[in-house]
Length: 535
Image 1 (cartoon, rainbow, N blue to C red):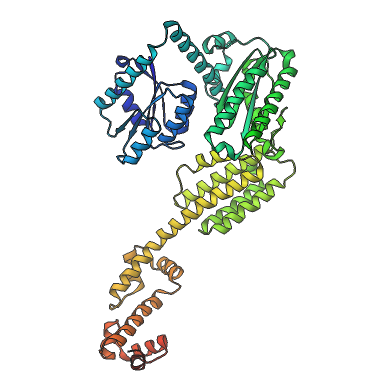
Image 2: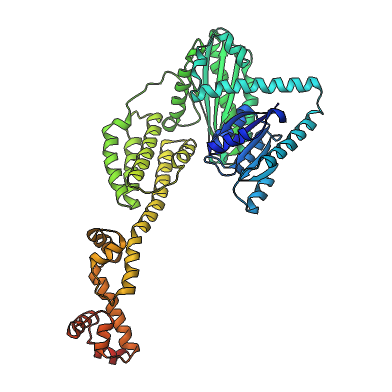
């Protein structure tokens, strides 16, 4: 059966598509659903679907980007775009990326069924060109690779932990491993560098890692598997106990070879972290955690090294006095709607953290995450809107930072850019009542206006309106009203022959003597003197 992946950020849409079609009748089965682009991309890499049905707009990785990356992973994979967009440019881009069909919402059962029938026929036509034996080998190989990759991916993400308690024979049978009694170890290779923004460079390095690992593994490793997750490569190694020295040597050789390959592309650096050695699959979770702590250590130890050993966990900085002081300073800065105090607070934290003796890469990374959590909490508390995917976007970028200084600079840049935009929108929201009041005053200045009257129109208390009005205009309500009346009086004196008494009434005054006194104070001239000079 053909394998189908459905991806849409609305779970109900995924469920609708899944229930809409009679999959067995089409010779197909839905193997998984995904609610964001990154999850869909991971499923593509591990589950190898034949057809992907995806929305064009998803968090993490949009539909068009998913198509591009998916096609690079497997050019034979077919994509069907489901979208509410009718613009031609979206359809044109989708077709350019190799999308088979572009279906508009609301989804019609007949249209989707017809598209799937067409794709099924295409796959069957291509498959007929292979012999029965070749087809069987291909299916078995793909299924085996998928199961092995699933086991390693679940290990990395901490999913289905109960499997690690299975008897070794069951794991080998269900996931097509051939583990030997002996030792296990995990490792992580991290590739850093802006050159990796280019997908072709990523693919180049990934291919080199696979080829080099296969060449180096030799006789010392009994069984291994590797999975790529962006710029991270995770390894699962099984070997006889006495081979650990040789295994370590081979992983060091892999690191050295990849450093050479990275040099070909320019500014790429490569770091390797070895997790703890364990003597049954039950210890693999701890091995992964240890390797992850060491790969984070490159932020302070530097890149290009082999990092290994027992990692000593230290204090939780989110509970430290340093973070408590920063919390207060940052919270106060975020209240100001000014970006400079926010930047200064984070810059001071950066200097404190990087200058701290024996600070670890894990502590640095966790602190930046805590800062983001504080920022998100504060923005929500102050009812200031920011990007919905802020944390997800930050974490993706943080993975590509190779030093503590670079990571903090990235944090400061992301938070201040987001905050500056959010503060500007917040100020606009706050200024809206002032704009309403100013417009009302411009239209009703002839009337006996009061602060209480206009505050009711703005739906604010007189005291609060008075505060934000002074902040926006630099004047009190009465000063601004007087300015409107005096500017209008000037215009009438220059452009009309009306008497001063008439103009006095037209601009909202009923006492000529008071009007004359106010006008003289405002302009430096009596009304008749102003007329003679400027009319």
